[in-house]
Amino acid sequence: MLPLDVLGPGGPYRSRRQETIRDIAGTPVATLSLAPSLYVTRAIKALRRAPALPVDARIAAFAQAGRAFATQSVAGMTAQEYQHTVSSVTGIPITVVRSATDDIARAAERIHHSVENARPAAAVGSWRDPRARGGAAVWTRRGEVFAVHAAGNHPAVHQGWFDALALGYRVAVRPSRREPFTPHRLITALREAGFGDEGIALLPTDHNVADDILRHADFGMVYGGADVVAKYAGDGRILPQGPGRSKILITAETEWEPIVDTIVESISGGGGVGCVNATGVLVEGDPSPVAAAIAERLAALPSLPATDERAVLPVMPIGPARRWDEHLRQRAAGTKAWLGGDGIVGDLGDGSAALRPAVHQLDSPFAEQLGMELGFPCAWVAPWDRDAGIRPLRDTLVLTAVTTDENLIDELVAEPTIANVYVGDHPTPWMEHGLPHDGYLAEFLMRTKTIRH
Image (cartoon, rainbow, N blue to C red; front, side):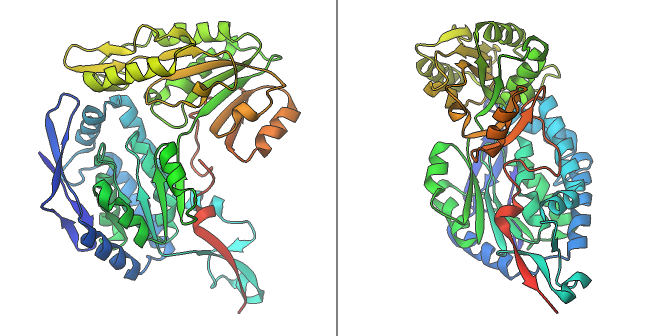
């Protein structure tokens, strides 16, 4: 049993209240300490009192921590042991966990590039910059402590708070109780690399204490579904990170056959568990041939245990898998099932199941199912026309627009609720370090001040 302690300002803390983390088979793997309310309050106060590291020290610590996270033994676990544990507990394919490990390390090594890209071109990073003597805009923090309610659907989600730490915020992370291994390992590596016990904290809690972390911090970021977005929508201190509802649009003047690989990768890449995975495919014209081609390709994906080197689909205990199957059947009522209509439960014979892909065709681009996002490869294919316009494409994290219509591209880029637009043959999960995911986090955490000295 691996002990996952609270990582507070006084060092590791093993609380009396603990939660057992089990793998897909139900075998106990770890005990997660849960921080009580008073401990959380004191921890946030200690983070606030702690001075920020100098910027050069922060950048160097990130690089060192990234290398340790990906290649060295941290908190008593090798990188390989960590990856196997995450895969066996979450059901995320082992190759996806490995890829995420490397991606996190690269993000840490390139963090300076990321935060510099977010800074306004005319702003300087410090009042000590010689350009401030005659008057200059200085890029400065709006607060001191940043809190995160992290998601557990994918290890790489923890890149989302890197910029805050690099910008000098002290950071408190409440991990998902589904997957606390990645933040525990990452925060341990960051503390050992130079951020120390009072620069960053891991504060696992139950739901009753969770809001205490946000209440005592200056700013916070929360991952969750539409209910979480609605809960915090009116709080200017909180940045909600909701469903991605990523989509692909194919207009009539383009050929879809050459990009089937891109469509399939968009839907199923990384196990299909991410917010950047496409869940909607809108086609100008008859969507049936596109749906049929996608279904044929996705049907060939194998059902395998998550720790199998060939695994590409997420795995969970068979009971929850059957509940997801029933939920999908209910929501898909009235649609045409090209794949998954007879079930998505790929029984592995050991009490677990791979979640098989599903492809359903809708009658309208305004069908409610188009906004439905599930934690496995599931696509809704719908007709689209110019009269529908961009309304069905709103509230989208990533939109791949396979079109040559520049006026349409103008509209898509200008639409405030579409976060990213990829024009042409580019899969929706594509990301590049230094480019914004859902805007730069620094847009939320920083401001400019005019300084003259």
